[in-house]
Image (cartoon, rainbow, N blue to C red; front, side):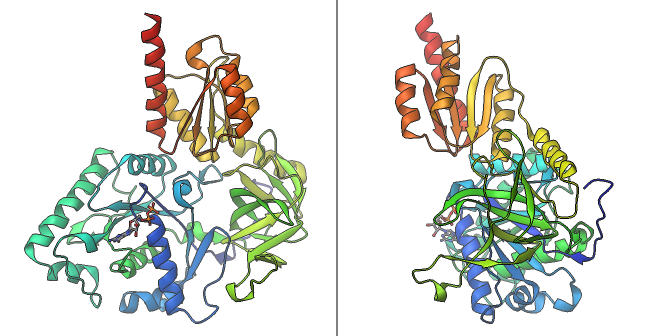
Length: 459
Ligand code: GDP
């Protein structure tokens, strides 16, 4: 926010929670369980529908958590979980140069321990200084585990046999050991009293729901205690948000799924959105929310709304969005100076800009955050980058890669993106090699093996 801004913090918003972790460790199941518990516990209509996010209001958390959460002790309105789909789930979602998510849950399978994407997620949490809790998931699979849904997790733990506790202890120690290896300072992950130890690990089962009340309690409690000031927003002010995904939507053209973390967005607002080449200035055509399931017939899956306030997930339909990027800022102009808002968006994009060289490989990624993570990792591996962009691998990327003098650099590294058919065809003709993967370090490893192959052939 700039100095000239007439921001007037009047409300407390919902903390935004991201769920991260290695593939198959249970991120989707955990989100489903939280959503499912909320729906079961909630009165009809208590769960507000969002795009790309699920809001769980305080009273529902309190019902799920039983005696653990007394609504009178809280003034934050609940938790907003970002529903990042599948492999997109780890991403640095940005807000004003920081992390969009206020808090994160790092899901670790107790049987599988720390895996490549767990470490990548940790790296991202560390760089974005996002506080997090580890959800040690799948405790129901620990042999001999005896579920006791009535008691909070510590009691449940105590009631387990010595053998089971030992087994679980080993997993938890491994998790904790990995956290200390990573050089986390005490305040980077939240330390909570659990298992009579001072660590930020909550054992859960996304399948049976065991431990989920504890997890929600811990998240709510820590947010209330440590984050209240950061949650102050000017609820009526011009909206500020981040693009989650750019999507074509039948009848609406290109739309941006957006998480709004400050202010309000209205259906007649002018917007500035971060684009591939420059900030996009546009006007809202429609604000779209998912329609309740019962109302979906042949009509659109969405209903139009006049305005939404932070923190919310909303789909924005507007012209000129083709170049919008996941992870980029969204700003409502309203009664602010357009030039100033454009400058703000430009500054935020420049913050994330990747250093490129005259010669090097082409890098594509699904979001600005993952592009930045890729660029960092390639920098560590001393691989120069000629172009780095958000989006699928397109023919023009092949053209750029094909001009490299050095055969090793005739390569495109795509992280969490698709390769367009005509790009594949052109790559074959131009002798450009395209690598794609969903794990950064594997992607770089594949590229390094390819470079080794070329070097060997040259000897
Ligand atoms: P994601 O890739 O991290 O989103 O993982 P998913 O939520 O898709 O889960 C991967 C697999 O693990 C699925 O087959 C789930 O049913 C299973 N799973 C997830 N959580 C649990 C759990 O707590 N207990 C058990 N037994 N299985 C789980």
